Length: 539
Image (cartoon, rainbow, N blue to C red; front, side):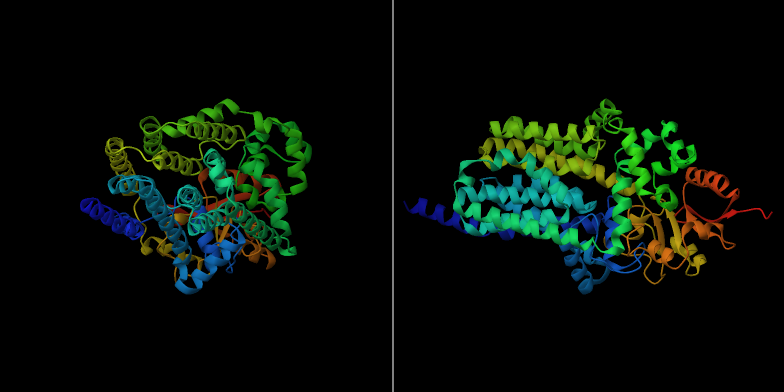
């Protein structure tokens, strides 16, 4: 009896420190990753939203309307930037990752998993978000944490666990609503059970979260319904099928459609990509919508088999391969249930559906789903033998994943401020950037802004171009649109690929009977900086 009492006391003390240990492990993992492997944004999206929150680069003024995230998250990020400066956006992202990792670790520990297994699982799943952060990953991880703590609530019936689950679900939603709902969809078999819906507190919590989501959605929607946002709303809705879902590529093969609206083959090429924003006369939402209607269902059915194969082949990439291997092995080694099988089925069906809709191989969207499918089997209290076996497998996947990410990072050299020296040639003039030709992720990184003190204004050709806070909108309002500056005697400073410049040259010739003069005047991090002018011969 005395021995049993001492054993129970040790378990109580150990349980008391589970959360601090979980937090410490995640903090050490995050800081260690950032020290030995300086983080870099995975995509331009986070760099752009950091610029918007700070009123730098693409943004002429700060804004809480981040476009990809909810207005409430934008307000929170603006508050962080007011306190911490440029890194405020990054602090919000890294804090969300740390909280999610802590909750996942804590939940696994409370579910009977050993520390070695918790450390290896969290290390495997969070190494990428820490070293290559991306807001879709962050939102997905936060929703996985919400599902985990909800599972723990079903066992312990503690209201603070339910409150934590609700807060995490709401946080996930305001960071990236689409990913939040996607993870929630795959997790439905674990949520639709009597322990949850048979509890009055759960129903009240669900109503509160639903109301919070509804209010946030209305606030986000209303923030974009001012007259200043009318052009953005119209153009963004019309262009999305062309740039995001493959309609632009389909349009190239339909001269009968684009010629009926006075467009040339070169114009159709511009509409296909970010050249749509380079030439506002092509971004006519009425015409774009009518051409899309004439393209019909071919937009959604064209290349369907190819897209599905692209989605399947994406899982061969190391980005997804190691978490996939861990998830599959855990499915086999841990207790199999119909809920796990149903979640896998929903996951596969969702990936195929996204591919059929023209969005294949979006690995950052798939990654949180694999995180969920890796963590879920461990919540069923696997035996000690299975935990040791699983730990060895997960540790191997962790090391292989870390080696791959480190190798990729070593090939991607950091940019130093002297690599931007030629930006001084602009002398306050805006830099016109076509698509991703400017190294946004490296210049506007998670922990530093290399343009600090340069007063760089970027007229970007992308989603943010018609937004009222953008440098592009400011230039147009001042009577300095891209087409006007292109034909001016001064020309403009541009970063664009050779192919895009050839397309622009054809546009200059077709629409203005001119010749495009391109001069290489410098380099920005090994990418050419050019002076571009559409020279129109005098009659």
